[in-house]
Length: 481
Ligand code: FAD
Ligand code: NAD
Image (cartoon, rainbow, N blue to C red):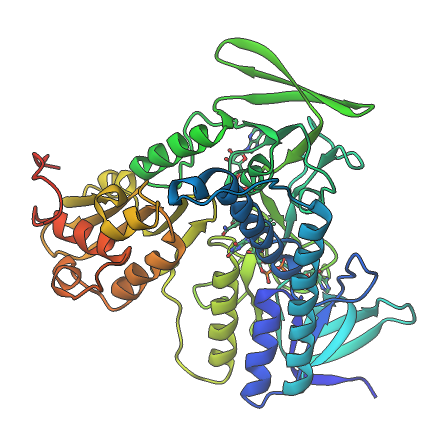
C-alpha cells in the first residue's frame, strides 16, 4: 500500500527541518524528504545553512577573528604573542566537526520527534501526491499527503564570464574548504558572502580584491552605515572595487586572470583563487510536475501569499524558494507559521521586523527601513545616531568603531528602522527587533534602563539622540529632515 502522511516536507534545510519537527510536535504524521549527500558521502539534513552556509562560514569567521585579534589587537592590552601561527587544516577540521555535530543533531531530533526522514529526492505531483526517488537507488514511490511543504532552498548563481573550475574558480561552498591561504584572492560580488568569506581569508593573510558591478556599496544597507563599514573594510585591507563589471576570466595553471571594466576602462586582475559570490537562485528544477498546479513568479520563485500558501490548496512553500530575504531565520519562522496554520492556529509572520546581519568585524546589522527608503516614501522622519567611540564599554573592549542609527516617524514616534555597524551588532539588533515587534516608540527606548557599562548603551544613546537628548556626546547641530 502507498505510504501516506498528514504532512510531507520536501527539503531538510532550516525551513524544511523546522517545519517537520514542529509538525511532529503538534501530533501530525510527517515525512521529510532530503537528498543531500555530504562530503563524507553520508546523507545529511540541515540544508545550505548547516552544511555549506551560516554555520561553517561563522566557524571560519570566528577562528580567523581570533587569529587577527592575537596578531593585531592583543598588544593594546599589553599581551604579546610570540610565534603566532594558524594551522589551516586544524581550523577546517574544527569547522567540519561543528557541521557534523549539528547535522547529526537534526537527525536525532527527527528520531526523537518521530519524523520519517526519506533519503532521496521529492517531486510534487498533481493532487498533493509526492514522488520519492530513494538516493540509494531502487524504484520511485508515490506518497500521498494531506499537506505538502516545499522547502528546496537555493544554490549559488553561476555566471558565464567566470565558470567554476576545480579548485581555482569556486563558489561559496568551495571557498569554505580552501586547504591553504591563497596569496591573491579575487571575489566577484561585494554582497554578504563576498564580504564574509573575503574577511576570513584576508585575516589569514590573503590579498583580497572584490569586484562589485554596482556603484553603490551594499545598497540594501542604510548608506551612513554602509559608508562607515567600507571605511573599516578598507583599513583591514579588503580592496573593494565598485562599478567593476567582469567581462571574462581564464583559469590556467595555478592562476586566474579576470578581465573587467570600470569607469577608467578595461582592467585585468590576476589571482591564485577566485570566488564567485553573485547571489543565489531558488531550486525549482525537478521539484514540480508539469501539472502540479504550483506557479512561479516573474523571478522564478514559487508564488505564495503572505501565509506561504501556493496556488494549490494544501501546498505551501517556504524559505529561499519564496519572496523575502534569503535568510535561515526567515525560513524557520515561515516553517512555524505554515505548520501552525495547518493546525488552525492564526499565526502570522511580521515581515517588517526580520533582522539581517553581515558577520564581518565590525558586524553590520539592521531591521526595518533605511533612511533612503523612508525618504523615498515621503514620510516625515527624524534620525538619531551614536558612535561606539563614545561608549565606555566599547573603549574598555577596544571595540570603539561604528555607530547605531535610529530612524523614527516624525509625528508618531514609531521606530521605522535601526541600523548598526559595530561589535556585537548581531546581538544588539535584537533589542530593536523586539521593540519594533511590540510597536515601541522611540520614547520607549529612551525611557528604558540599560545596564552600565554595556554596548547596549550605544543603542540607548542613539534613541536619545533622535530628540537631541544623548548625554555622553557634545550637542550637535540638528538637521531638519
Ligand atoms: P536550504 O537550506 O537551501 O535547504 C534546502 C534543502 O532542500 C537542501 O538540503 C537540498 O538538498 C534539499 N532539496 C532541494 N531539492 C530537493 C528535492 N527535490 N528533494 C529533496 N531534497 C531537496 N542565512 C542566515 O540567516 N544567516 C547566515 O549567517 C547565513 N550565512 C550564509 C552563508 C553562506 C556561505 C550561504 C551560502 C548562505 C548563508 N545564509 C545565511 C543563507 C541560508 O543558508 C539560507 O537562507 C537558508 O539555508 C535557507 O533555508 P531553506 O530551508 O529555504 O533552504
Ligand atoms: P548578494 O545578493 O548578497 O550579493 C551579490 C553581489 O554580487 C551584489 O552586490 C551584486 O551586485 C554583485 N554582482 C552580481 N553579479 C555580478 C557580476 N557579474 N559582477 C560583479 N558583481 C556582481 O549575494 P551573495 O553574497 O551571493 O549571498 C546570497 C544570499 O545568501 C544573500 O543575499 C543572503 O540572503 C544569504 N546570505 C546571508 C548571510 C547572512 O545572513 N549573514 C551570509 C551569507 C549569505
